[in-house]
Length: 98
Image (tube, rainbow, N blue to C red; front, side, top):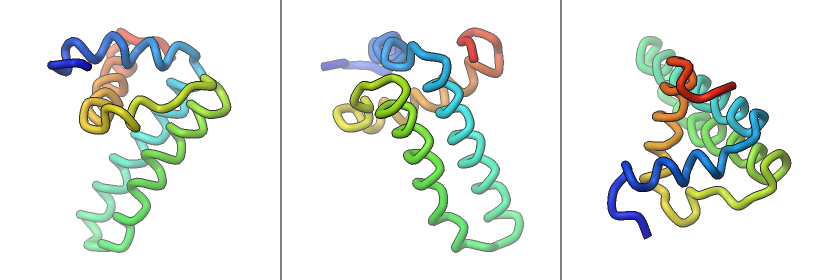
């Protein structure tokens, strides 16, 4: 069990060791962010239903078919959500590879 996100994040990265998994996470997170922005700007609130589809759909395909592991979100849902956005930002900064 992890007491802090700082302790959890290195484990999170080990669960995303394959580039295909990280790329799918990145694509899903990018779609989540773009959908959120578009839904707010256009006031098309029904689009918010796509957020979990994009967020979980891309990530779970990566875990089940590329990484071949169980998503950490099943055991650590909030830390995993934070990990998605942190890894997305770290990939943009070049700290985590694509």
